[in-house]
Length: 493
Ligand code: GLN
Image (cartoon, rainbow, N blue to C red; front, side, top):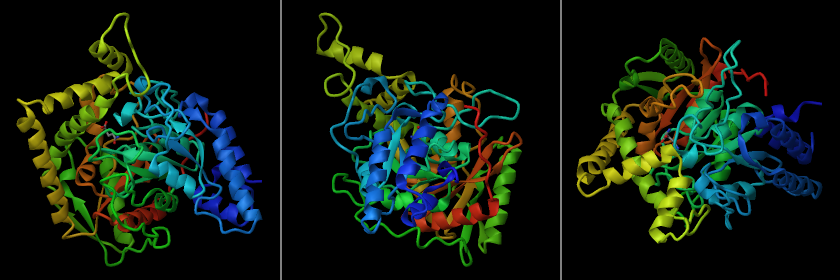
């Protein structure tokens, strides 16, 4: 019998529906895989019973002749940024150690309503701040990928590195991610999987631990474009509990998938040719352009003149919002409390926050507080907001000339753990291609494009117009079909 853990979401959904195997067998197979891969540190909490219960419900529904739900029998991994009722949720921070939410996030609830089950909570960069998973308070995730004849542990990308690892190592057919400045797309690129950040407002933020509220968006990470479309349909939707949720119906993205790009224009933004871009990334990008042409699209060069200001603007706006969002962790309401002998309230706040937050989180709170302070607000925060508007306008103008944009996802393949940890600026540069779409709230997807000279995955990014997830998925599908990317990491764990 086939190893059920080699199947993706589509194959599992169809196989359960057609009676090729039981949902319970699928859940058992993935539960065993998860338990056998602890060396990767991808899961912070394992929830095999949750996956089994959902599977049994799917099997019972089938036995009763009911129409199956869209994700019936599909077990998934849940990034530990989503509050899950009765299941510890920490955002990979000590400050939330011991926090067991009494409520369920809207995105996770939507997935359970669609019939999915949960294999466990996935490790991440602390409060989703990072690009390598090294800021987790519970140890970094280790990528299942390695360079040939080299056992150096590689970064799985961040912040959704537990999610990227779980999917690429075959521990889950799909996983949730969140993307504030690239945290779905960059880890997807590093591990040879697909991931889409939808338009800001498509997925509810309610119950998702906040990092930078004007940027945070949930999205799926899975093995291919179709699997992402299916999962995103289940995750998205209007939610009255999130004031920025879009009051729109969720399109049937899967049904409208098409890799035929005839009549479409694909824009190639010249400002993304950044200095020092490795030749391999250039070559991959050119390959992507050729694939788009092969799929019937016309290629046009476009200009996004403010691209070079995106990263500095992001690293003002995101920390500013984070410093405000993270003010709630005070030792009173959630998780950790550090109450030194004879301490007063202020001392408790200080001691709790000093002990509970990691270095990167503290760095961002300091930067954020600084750029919002009375004397510097206009110089930094207001300026950054103006830049954000200019970046959004750049995209609007470019989309007057094309339907989607094609760029590399990240400026390099996965780097070694530890390689950039001591240099925050080098780490922040990882986000150079993903941050602009985040600032503009646009849908963007990473799909595997090929391997670098060391056999490590490289991703291509498609950015679309607001609400045009379909265009993004379709262009990504055209790449997927031409790239024929089948590489998988060899199990060493
Ligand atoms: N790497 C970026 C950061 O550290 C993006 C993180 C994210 O998208 N959550 O902020």
